[in-house]
Length: 312
Ligand SMILES: [Mg+2]
View 1 (cartoon, rainbow, N blue to C red):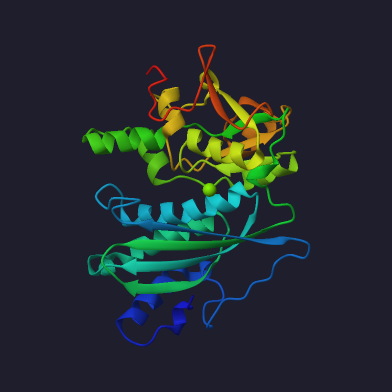
View 2: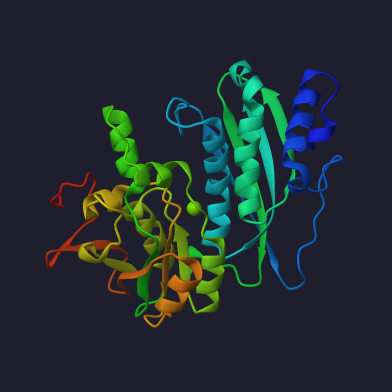
């Protein structure tokens, strides 16, 4: 990892200077060969990295460059949220095609705004020319007691933040060439990492968490496997954005909402008032076997490979 300022003179260095000027005080400690940071005494360093590749993770015709920068940064920060970690900083590596050189400000703004919204300084990064626009975002955070996937216990309740289905509805419309509903598009283009929400939930007794990046069904299976428990999800209880069905909600990825296990006694009213976000109990945890089942009209069904178990 090289710091931005370790790049040599010339066009690349000009671009980096333009980007750091754009970030202003959001960029912190850039100006050395590597960044240094203090981890609060008694806390652990929590690190994650996430890569967004044009054509794989996004299509440039569907999102502005600012939205590409925002989403890539939020996707990485969301992994800190899933650990109930407080962000300490963001390191940004960009592969920049020539077609994007004149629009680097917009990309930088999206990254900078997302980092600032989570109070995460930009500590450094790397910029290189390449064929496909690619952002590799590394996030650093700290937590006294990181919330893991493996802590769910039989008898816990299963909870989810926010409302599900937006990104799937937006992507279905984009692939189909239809008009994208505004709410669904906002959920796809401007997701939010649930950082403070996760810290609140951890303090309130959450036992395990995962962020919903692959879809509820897939991520629930990751959590169930890590904890060695069965999760039973009541399809009728899933919190949905308007026009989403439970079937859409369970497969919708890149939600960046949190799936959490913990007591059935979370102070839902306090949570919802503080964060302006729903917190919904959607199921149960037991130890009968490991895996995930959905309750659909009173029947237990396996997580769908497609979503044909669900009526739309
Ligand atoms: Mg994750």
